[in-house]
Length: 331
Ligand code: M7G
Image (cartoon, rainbow, N blue to C red):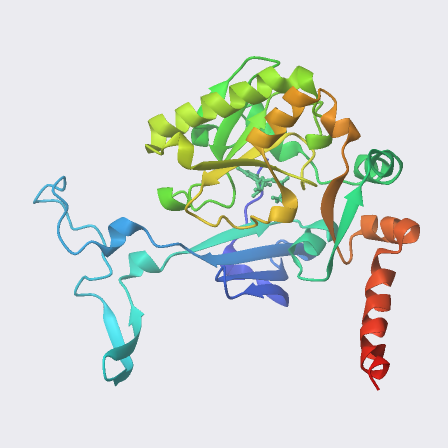
């Protein structure tokens, strides 16, 4: 059952992060009218520009009687001049209300793991060998991970059913394609879809082997075709990739257009679907034999476990003290 909450009743406790590049702010607080103690995370993110919103002429397909689509260049635009200097000018603009919407995301009730995930902090790279995966990572993710209920709700048509873009119900090779939580759903330029496989026993990239090739190839081809039909996007302009480590241990592919720097697109976390398929074609058990780097955040218990074994944090301290001593070597 979905909870009901009133965003206007949010009570701020702490700002978890404020990202001027993504124009997003992440807040920790509560909804006191529901519970004084349950933590809530609220993310506000300014929407990306839609190219249709900067039109200066009435589009040919718009019939003359309908009300005009909102545009930045409408007479509603309020403009305050900061300065004009020679050929340069700077303004503060307030466009029509419809163009000022902000995307809001709520996680409620949020667990400690969610708070950790949404807070900014130190990060460390771990080069995970198969042995380290078996002895440290796997026991940890088996005992502590985010609930997959939202994934099963999608697969079982209990939530987000109307958002499904494409579905292949084959038990082995099937998947569901639908918009990611991160997408505002308005702007094809910033499209962000997820391909969630039907099979429930593939936790991540690590579990993939050559027997999954038909599934991966089917996902790649069918998703491209569905995106072409629904959104008119050229399949050769799509980025399709896995995260390692993912936040959710049920295999899913991230899909977004190349021309857009999707939120959370980091090279240290991403593995292109094409490369994964090719690695499995070349070596059926590639992902059981490979060392896979991944990033751990300060505050994550898995970092404590790795630090005990590999002294991940210690190395940084040593490097710093060596750097401090360096000038003396020249004296
Ligand atoms: P991930 O690689 O496991 O973790 O991707 P990440 O969050 O570190 O990238 C999971 C993806 O699922 C993310 O892109 C989330 O935005 C998306 N996602 C998470 N939840 C809880 C939902 C949801 O309820 N619905 C949808 N449609 N997407 C979600």
